[in-house]
Length: 182
Image 1 (cartoon, one colour):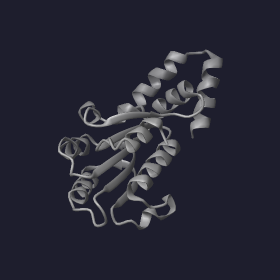
Image 2 (cartoon, helix red, strand yellow; image 1 turned 30 degrees about the horizontal axis):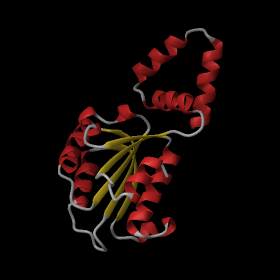
Image 3 (cartoon, helix red, strand yellow; image 1 turned 45 degrees about the horizontal axis):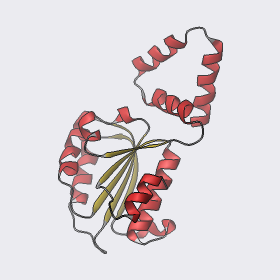
Image 4 (cartoon, one colour; image 1 turned 90 degrees about the horizontal axis):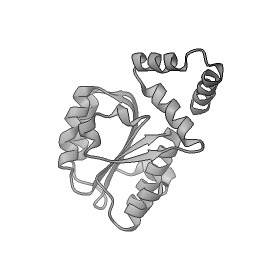
């Protein structure tokens, strides 16, 4: 688990929401460990806990945002904590704006771990309501650049490729990095 998350859990200072940015495997593992510690269930058993919600979305839309809002405001069934882990490749602008209310006034005992490939995947107002934690393993800078490339819109990707130009070594480095990330 990321040392920041461990410290927050051990000191009982867990925030209501975390934006875990970067490597999905590392982020998922950290979020599951946090959920396990908070709910008192082993990771393998979390799916059976009624106050645990973990889903992955290619595109998180307004319908998913409303569902999350409705689920988050229900009272916990066991104990006093509810945990939501969301793996999101991207948000619609409407869904991100709809989530603002949840994170401005979060239900007591409810904690969110939102996993995204790049900090740019979340709008600034949403990021400002969450604790941003970078979750990169291994060669951090290369992986971070590749994850950001994959999360970028097509125009931004073309700009990055144009910047590389005809430099064969940089192109190979980007392709190798993309292969490692994927």
